[in-house]
Amino acid sequence: MPDTSTSLLVADGKAALTSYAAYAQQGGYQALRKALGQMSPGEVIAEVSAAGLRGRGGSGVATASKMALVAGAQDGQRYVVCNAYDADTRSLAAQALLERNPHAVLEGIALAAYAVGATEAFLYVRSTRTQAAETVQAALREALDQGALGRNIFGSRFSLAITAVGVERGFMGGEESSMIEIIKGRPLKAQQRPPYPTEAGLYAQPTLSQNAETLANLPTILARGAQAFKATGSQATSGAKLVTVLTPGVTEGKLIELPFGATLAQALHAANADVSEATTRCVVVGGMEGGALPLTQLNTPFDFETLQEVGAIVGSAVIETLPANTCMVHWTMERTTYLSKETCGKCVPCRVGVKRVAGLLEGVESGLGSQNDLAVLSEFAEYIPDGSLCGFGVNAVHPLVTAMQYFADDFTAHLDGRCPTGTCEPVRAHRYAVKHVL
Image (cartoon, rainbow, N blue to C red; front, side, top):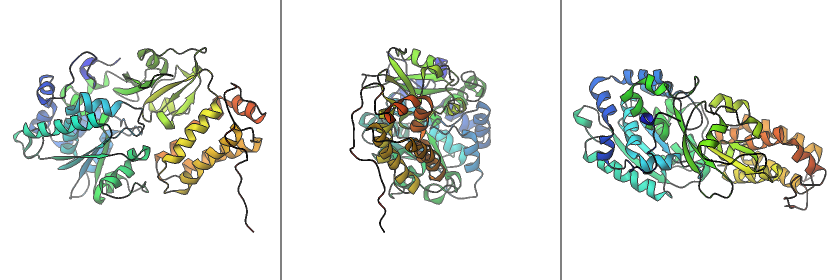
């Protein structure tokens, strides 16, 4: 597990660092004072680059690279947008940060803004997570009162205004381009990229869009140095990740801080999850759009590239175990049906394709499928991500692809008219068909 000196979470049994005084007593805002008093914006970016910090929002893009692009933009207004939305409501990462350590997020936003030359930032949160929203609002007011935000921060020439934006817009509300549209007061619709936000984001100005967990790491990097941060993690990805582990029968997951490079088995052990062939069919890694991996893959390191190689993603950093009697056809159908309802509907491959996959799976589960359906499903698994505007459509096929890859026998059994676990019931009486009108 990570060094406690660089941990983002407040240890169980200890008081949360919700107040300015408690956070400052633990060294809070010293990184911001150091940056404003001793470092240029370029030096801040260089330190973040040396630390090897990658985005925690699921993409894994080098944070310093995005910062440099915004900082290097032509003269004009620049913005920082902090995504603390947790698109997958089962994820506890952003919620825990805002409830237990909100000033780390605010200090991270301020450091990022100083580095890229922004004087205005937005903190984007789920309005339905009322405790988190109220806690961070109180922290904002206190930081303003203490001179850590607002005009001439800590007596410097740097000023920053942070506006909290609370919304509830489902899964797609957390997608980067949709988030920027919502802040602008526009409908939730994914946008074509390029141009990327670093070039033309909020109000068509250069915008640094980062996950709350990513920004919360900046104070540690600036206060303790890049090498201290790199002491935890893998060769490819420095530091640790807030991971939510879900097990059957438990309504709320267990939040752990997992070093990048640790195995899935180590993650489950850290969360006290009981995993064996007798109790568990598979492990789903990446949240609602994650991939279903057999227990033989539990030695896979938790990292962006290693998970991608086996069909999973870091995604929302939710790891869930499925009961031993789970039929993977039924699970895939349910998961894809959910995703078909969460799409913003702007692009045809995602809006129609995901719904079509769900319909085909309903037929397979109901004993109405054919061998050709599997070929069509495989075709959709390539077509949907290739034609989608945003990461939602790109990742939406992971449940289907991994279920068909690792649990092909479940699909074959249903084509033979039987459920391998005896748990499925027909959900439709007719095949998903297209009527041709002459």
